[in-house]
Length: 243
Image 1 (tube, rainbow, N blue to C red):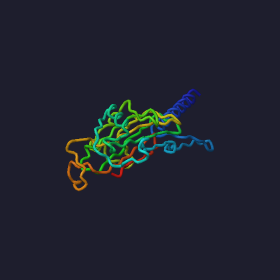
Image 2 (image 1 turned 45 degrees about the vertical axis):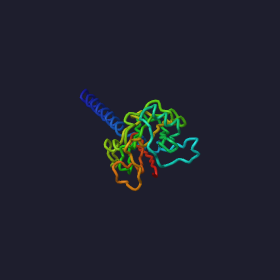
Image 3 (image 1 turned 90 degrees about the vertical axis):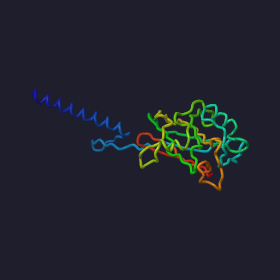
Image 4 (image 1 turned 30 degrees about the vertical axis):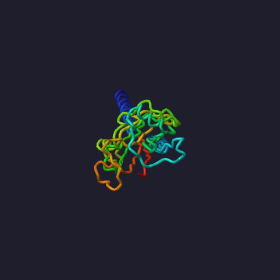
C-alpha cells in the first residue's frame, strides 16, 4: 500500500512538472489561447497582428495650406533638441524653400502588451551622396504637439550610416533599431514618434540634375519603413518622397 502511494505521488509530481514546463514554453514563444473539447485541452497561437495599428504620415504645417514640396534644399538643421525645434518653429521652411520633411509615427493596440518594438526597419535614398541625407527621431507628447524634448538614441544620423549599421530585411528577421526600446503599450493608448528628414548644408553638396553621378550630388528620392512587433504579431507602414 505504501509503495502504491509513493508511485502515485511520483506520478502526480511528474505531471505537475510537465504542466509547468509546457506553460513556461508557451509564454516564452507565443501567447496562447486555451479551450476544451471532450475534456481535452487545446491550445492555439494568438496572432496579435489584428490588435496592432501603425501609421506613418507626412505632417502638413498649418501655414502650408497643403502645398508641401517633395523636394528638399540643403538646410542648416542640427541633430539636437534645439535644432529640431528651431526647424519645426519655421514650419520646415529654409530661405523660402522646403528644408525638411516631418513624419508622424502613430502606434496603438486594442490589447495590453508588455513588450512592443517599434523599429525604423528600412531607410534608403537614390542620391550618390547619401551621407548628407540626415534623419532624427524623438518621442512625441501628443499627436498635435511636435516639439522635441529628448531625442531617441541612434535616431539621429545619416542615411549612409543607417545603411552600414542595419542590413536589408530578410524574411521574418527584424532589422533596424527599436525606438520604443521594448516598452509596454496599453490598450486604447496611442504612442507617437516623430522623424525629421533633411539635407545637410555642406559646402561641396551639389544638386545638379545633369550630373547625378557626381559623388557630391545629393539629388535623389528616399523611402523607408517602420515596423511594430509584439510577440508573434507584426505590422508595418511605409513612407517616401518623389524627389
